[in-house]
Length: 215
Image 1: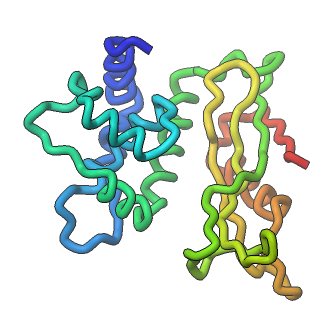
Image 2: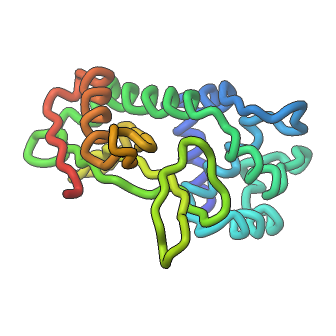
């Protein structure tokens, strides 16, 4: 993507979807941080848009001043360590609010008037792993054994539009650990049912939703 196109895309996101307002409202649980949550999240968002493979790649792009047309040279940018520490403790309610606003604005702008497949707005639900470690864990971690060692991870069910673009993510729902009386972690089906109910409730304007599971 040419740099001038990328800058135009950022301006479009700010002007039409008011994404800057949503980012400025994000918070995290750091104490007396040097950088606001918004200052940390924005370069990370740019990295996602450019489909970077790692935070180290983002670090290299910042070092090479790849975002000079977006950030003023007078603005100090957070280090990769700061970005990593922040996303560990960011409060996801603000992120979900931004996602809901984006979908609702897309509906208002009649993005889906012609549907995504044969006049219908079609969505698919699938489960995906979002974090895994053999050492680090929290009280919400799911657990399994890999090669005889206990493995901790988080997974979620994600609903995304399929067919004609844009393939927006509508929402996601995290799996719960130790969900039932047998002490087993929750599976994809239960999380998908909650997700489907939530999306239908929040986005009733998308009246033709056909959801399919990965199973």
